[in-house]
Image (cartoon, rainbow, N blue to C red; front, side, top):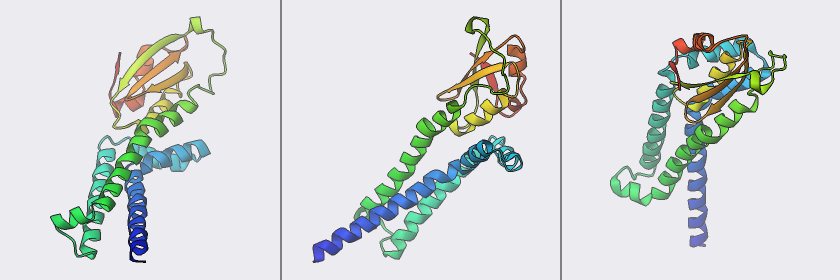
Length: 204
């Protein structure tokens, strides 16, 4: 019976660590996710609100710092409640602490490397450009943009697609955008997009 209670407690601790890890892992990406959701939904006013914050280069590092502080505060509070706020307490509760940290890191990596790149390239073609262009008539341009994370990639793609001459924009990790464009525009005009005042872009 004692062993069953012990296993149950361990499972509860692990589940608690996973839930908190998911929350702290998602926190830095909350504004990026909200921007994408409202962009897809076509809610322009709300999208503009989140866009304003995302255009601030230091906003994402600030959210990461807040997430890390919350995660460590949560660990300290957990250990304090168990009267184990010491190095020996850390060792005794390493399973819970490791689960929380692993969950935070795992969620962040999943969003950086998988979720945001997939979402960005899901609708890479410019729907406003209804003209047909043969591939041989298109020019290509690759840009390296100083975005803080892949969550900002949809912001760059959306801005570039406002140019009627841009046919398609593809995102490549970590911060490269491959642009196909017609004779309606030029590389200089694309590089002159307003968003690049906030995030510097160079041709590669």
